[in-house]
Length: 476
Ligand code: BG6
Image (tube, rainbow, N blue to C red; front, side, top):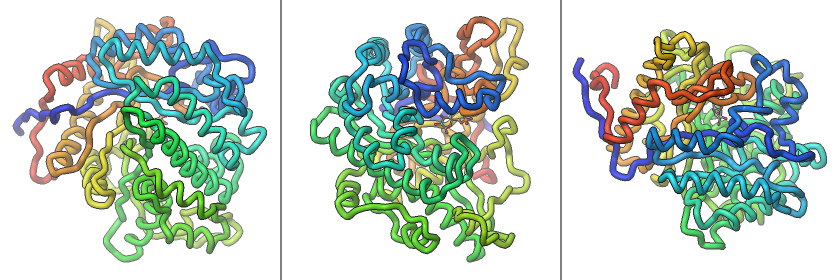
């Protein structure tokens, strides 16, 4: 099998991503500045792998200069992180800014720019202030939507002149799906209607923040980051295709359609009405959503969804869940990341690229996350203590070449951001699965050390190409 050079297109952004809560730690946080994630961790630290969590995380708050030095050494084009809403404000009702936090974020942004790294800033990566959950039910409340917009406005005022990429949310569907639909995460309530209202309210909040951003005519772009799953039916039989369409409707189109096209799918509203869990909306809100679609789209792509028609009977006593219409399907022979339990199917990059081109007006988009979390990476250390993560290099190469194929065929993708720059804290899994180009050594004061993949990324960034196996016809 031959080896081929895969060239990055001109101006293609090759970077890495993270979030505030997964890296910063609680240093500098004041009383009353807890986030949703903070209280989740405090309520059940024993559920978090080996007890690690957001309390110290990677200590980025104290060590960001060191990390940015490493980013520069590797030569990243861009770095995405979030602003922790709960840290950024002193008063969530009046949007009074915490001056220390504002200064900290200003320093991070300046340091990135000074080192030639484009900052990309997300406004919410599960960092909803805990107080707003307690007092108003969090994203179930439209009042909280308006408080978020006030917060967003403060961020734009302070950093809008230097940050060229803003994102309103990271994976807005996740929290309520896991917490209220599946009831497997804090606050462990099963309430489908609430989950659906949270979805809708976040779509509205995103549109309202975009409206505010656009009014000030900053010289940048604003979008949203969605964890879309390329959805494959088990077979082309009508029942499997229909099941996959419904899965796609609930887990992809719920956000993609309003955020990119300005419209919530009518079929979705009908199904929800039928099951008596529709969200509440007004005509004025729908107009705001229609008129404030995203200027750029961020997509987190990790694993496909494989779906078949439901096989077991539905128990009528079970509250409505979209899986009323489908079951998950495991492809025999699939390749797995066993540490994370996710199927590896690099073709999702190409299939999503084509979908965005053909069904979503070929909007400008970025891969805002893709990556591979691996357990016990220590065992891959060589004699010099450098993790030899060839599997990660292979994973990135495979995904990138499928993405480049999509771009060659006209998809408007402008970049790829690896999850993640350093190892960091995952929800519940904490430091179990390591994602970074840079190791965080928990046994040695969280020291940083570049892994083999980090050196490889550096070469790709310098050469603007990478070498990898040529595509074989069977594989395509
Ligand atoms: C994305 C999130 O879903 O995937 C990140 O935006 C997360 O916050 C990443 O860390 C990897 O998933 P996990 O659950 O292994 O951390």
